[in-house]
Structures are given as C-alpha cells and as structure tokens.
View 1 (cartoon, rainbow, N blue to C red):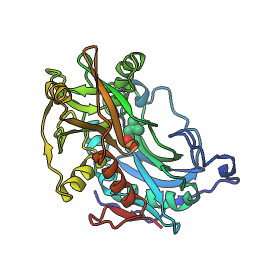
View 2 (cartoon, protein in one colour):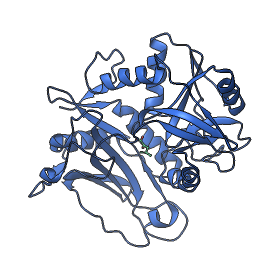
View 3 (cartoon, protein in one colour):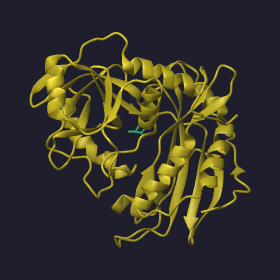
Amino acid sequence: METKVTNITVEKVKTSKISQVDFSNLPFGKVYSDHMLVCDYSNGTWHSPRVVPYQGITLDPAAKIFHYGQSVFEGMKAYKDTDGHIWLFRPEENQKRLNISSKRISIPELPQEIFMEGLKTLLQVEKDWIPTTPGSSLYIRPFIFASGTGLHASPADQYKFIIACAPSGPYFSGKLKVLIEEKYSRAANGGVGYAKAGGNYAGQFYPTQLAIEKGYQQVVWTDDNTHEYIEEAGAMNIFVRINDTLLTSPVSDRILDGVTRKSVIELAKSEDFPVEIRKIRVEELVAASKNGSLKEMFGAGTAAVISPISGFGHRDKDYMLPEIENSYADHLKKRITDIQYNRAEDPFNWRYQVL
Ligand code: COI
C-alpha cells in the first residue's frame, strides 16, 4: 500500500522528565521517554500520524483488544555513536514483519511510510533519550491494537498504531539456565507462532513461571507435536554450537523469523563458521553434552542481543556447559553490537542512519 506521509504533527511536552532519569542505571523497558507516535485506523484507512507527549490512552471497555487480544508488536533499538549520530539496525525488517504479523491477526496493513517516517520523526524529537552507557540503547516498541468495539468475535474496524521508546539497559544480566519444556507448547503448525502477536508471549508466562520456580530463567520450547526438537528459547531464537558447527532451527509457522537470528547466521557464514539450519533433536543435545561436543548455547533477539546459556535442564537432570575460550557467542555479540553502535564497518549495509 503506497501512502505519502506529508505531515506528521509534533506536539512537544511543556517540561521534559529527562532530568529525573538515572541513565547510569537503566532497567529494561520501565522508563519511557517524553513523546510517542500515534496513528489511527478508521473508515478503512490509516491516518493522522502524530508525535504527542507520552500519555495514557482512554479506551472503551468493549475495545476488541481486551476481549480477543487482537494486537501485534515489534522490538527495535536506536543507538547513539560517539559522534552523537543516531542509528537503527535493519528497520525495514521490523516494518515488514509488523505487517506479516498483522496479516495473520487480521489487522490492516500499515503503510511503510507511516512506520518509517513516524519512527524517524519520533527519534529526532527523542534524540536526547538515547543512552550511551555501555550495553544500553533506546528500546523502541511499535505496536498495533484493536481499539474498535464490539463483542462479535471478528476483526475490529478501528486500530491504533503507537511507537513508544524506553531508554534501557540489558534485558538479561548474566548467563541463563534454561529448561527444555515437554508439556506446554508455545506454538503449533498453522498457528500464530511466527507472528509477533501479544498473546504468543502471554501464553509463555505460566510455563516460564513454573520453570523459574525450579531454578531456571527461561524455557526452551520444543515442537508441539513430538517435543523432540528444540525451537525457541523463551523470547529469543536459539543457537547451539556442537564442536565448531553453529546450529539453529529453521523458521516455520511456529518460529519467529528473528532479525538478530538472521544477522547472526549471515555474520557466522561470512566468517566461514560452519552453520547448519536444521531441526535439532533434544536427544542430540543431551548426547553432545554427555560426550563433550556441546560447546555453547545462546539465545538471540533484539532485546536480549546474544544471551549465553549456562546449561539446560531436561527431565529432572541438568546438563551444564563448559567455560570455553573463543566463544562464538562473545565473538558474534561483539561483531553485531560493533555494527549497531557504529564502532565498525558495516559490510552488510544493516545500519540505518536517522540523524
Ligand atoms: C525483542 O527482543 O525485542 C522482543 O520483542 C522480545 C520481548 C519479549 C522483549
């Protein structure tokens, strides 16, 4: 859908709250910047994109988001380099995926220009909110939800697209111990697992809480049919290193096509690391752990970047990973973040300059 965004209006706050924020100690996703982008869908069209002061939203209790969970979202980050320039990482991937998710949830496609111009306008206004302390960035949360009302279980006729920004520190601190889940499932064939639908994440909370109570930090989801293959690690894609080969599961109906995932694969291939994109049996992991060939596991995602895994639990037994030199996770994290923060060449053209 082609729409020219000619004017995005900007209404600035009277008083910024930036001086109240401790930028040296930022939590993840809890502190919000002064402004947000809002855009409405009604009468069959997206219209009125505007930057306004960050504020609560009033919704009718019959809005379909509350009853039928019609919502999708994205996760992105803005980075500031040492010269004060502002960068995004592969934003067109998020823009496209938002519409892929929307299509599956019957939300009308958002024109690319509204997403991109809205994002750039917002970031120009919020440039001072992009933190520069190591490991921090401005986490960007674009989302769409059904604001239209009615209890008929069918798509709404009104939606809101919002982009909110949270100056954030790391999502996880330290290595993660994960539990291989064999009872609950995150996604099923023909379902919505590949979409960034809000409900996909809510469905993970209960099994994850059970795993936390057992001493793990995240769940490794297995296929819903047999529970024999690993698929995702909580809110991240999962990578495994057996000997020197980097393995990850192929994307499918059930697995999110992560931007960090595809970047890790491209980076690893460009450095001639052996990479295999194939189904990974739980049995293979257990055997590799027992014979010492399982060297590393890590999660990859926008929020989590690359998060090393210390070990996994399977059927009441823990399999801990060795401490190794020349870790792929450390190396790939450095390469990817050096590109994101404009500390290194970007041979892939992934960086996108905003300012
Ligand atoms: C992201 O990695 O940006 C996500 O959207 C995952 C979310 C659970 C923080």
